[in-house]
Length: 293
Ligand code: G1P
Image (cartoon, rainbow, N blue to C red):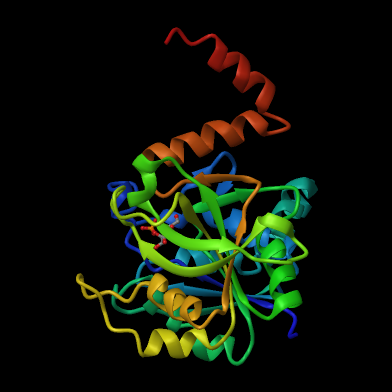
């Protein structure tokens, strides 16, 4: 089975939920504790053995390119001033990864965004990471999915259990435990998926977290998918086709998901990760305890 080397990060969205902050700054560049949101996903890629990160960008996203580019002038300025720790932080942003950028010029959905990366991905398996989601676990989320892909050759997505009143916010799977798998009941065989169903229509409480490991044949499935009611091609449409062919697994994620895709989730991620920060955590906890709520 081909080793997983590439990851696609869709970052073309307008970030309207965060206006006015995102009028001139990409949502992905908003800071969670001490680094931009997008850096969490890129660090997960590096920790998962990914070598090549492909950003699907849009207009007004050049700050993302600048962030992951080399900055020799800044580094030597910091070194000259004796700020070698800061110089190291700047140097390590790119984590030894290779970066490519391609554009999604029209907002035609997540499936369409992934399809925009088809030429750069080529005929190999690839990960998709939704950068709104920070996934925190002992084994990096994408590495866990890559290991399952490399053992089975099947597409695989992370899912987590959500309460009924939240199923309308996610892709929800219809699945059964994969028999005789070496992962026990942690790995399911997906029969079908529904994008953001109502509580009554949801086939389960297993929600797609935003981490995917896909075979290149998904591109054909996306190319022939017809745009849905709002004129968009959803990634879920391509995943459904893979599932119908018996080529899609789901893995129950046992880490912690922070969904920073809206203001409340973003604040929650900031507080939770701030509390865990080795330098800030203790004082931040004292500050929060002292609040009269
Ligand atoms: C997207 C996907 C959805 C998934 C979710 C995870 O939706 O379409 O299937 O469950 O991410 O965050 P979005 O949140 O971008 O609307």
